[in-house]
Image (cartoon, rainbow, N blue to C red; front, side, top):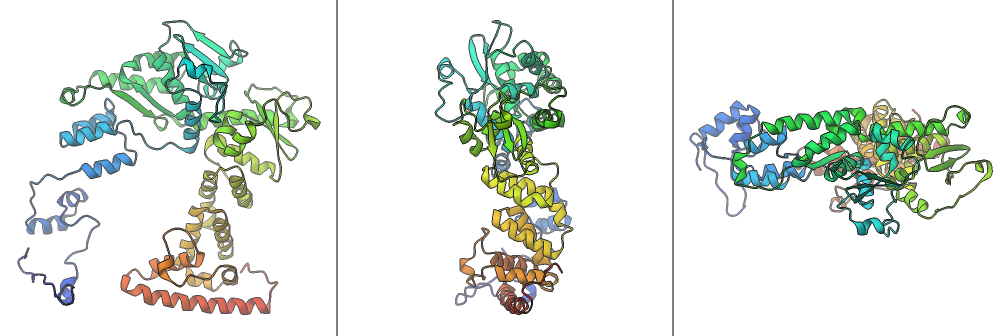
Length: 533
């Protein structure tokens, strides 16, 4: 296509490149990060200049865009568009065509990924029979070949069994907490009167307690409101009642010919106040257990915590719950599965009735942080001096997301760290595979390379690192050689143009070689000097 006032593009058959003048190669206006010719994105961005250019180019302003790929990308990333919800209604009503509407319906049952705590407890609930439980799975529940942690209470609703764990239910519901402390304290089975309770509603609520995600058929929501009222789940009850009021005014005539399948309601725990979410409930349970674990307060008032395992670290005793330890850590899951009726030691614990484990090579402060993460999926604060011990504990207990949680807490501290301290954090994060912290250190060093090059700590660090590969074909986007990754970070900051990368890479290599020579001389002159400059 030839535009007025511009020279037509030509291709040299011998060179195979565009034959244009240098001035014509420059854009006539700043380019935006939108597809060429995409008038819809330009309109949404309010880019008047680009719109004017596109209209003058003859773009069809009445054309319909195809959003299937964009909608699919958003849905796969976790966008929720459930029908008979406020946001979902708007998605279905505003769908441009029937094809996109069917796509939205097909993805309705694909909510966003769960957090580590919710995913672990959901997996535990699946092992406990919280997916279409039957009589056969109930009778076989004591022999679990998959290693799932067995439940400690079974409910019968209309003759159908549903297994659960006391800790989870009592932490999420004041009703269950009171019952497990009084009427149901010594009962392993609880039978509800026939016709008094809806099994689908009760099942959905118990599953919500484990996963912080509610998934229920719309036809069962009235029953769920009554169950929430009995279980004292007030905030959840309010949300469901509001949704029911919305549904009574909803009209789906446009969708009846598309799909007559049963509609479902999906709710994330993030829709509730923070104190009603799973991590907050587990944090409260942890605080009660830690208070009961304090040996100095053994003679004070004891609050029921449903603890069923003690962990001894150094001289301290931690009252914990096997359901949490086993679901969060494969290490503890393996140890607990092999200690039925077995005490690893007695000593001063001879008067305690709970089984216990003993952990070595770990401080009590670090272990308290470990179980804080296991119960809540987060850490409120971390002493920087504890970081290495926590990284080591994360590897030992196979709690790899703990490393990222520690990094999230420490990143504000790194913003105030000296060059010598950042060099230490870079080595530590590389050693334990803490990618977020490693990337932050590399980015900081690359953007302030000359500042770091003037410090002896950085030059001494270079002597401890493997040399760069030298062959760019061997480099990948995955974390590898620190100096290779540092070179790439530096090139991104200093050599944005592709035609300057080779020259800039050679300059970086020469600078690095000079720094290594200087560091070697400094090491020979003063091997015992401190590099905290």
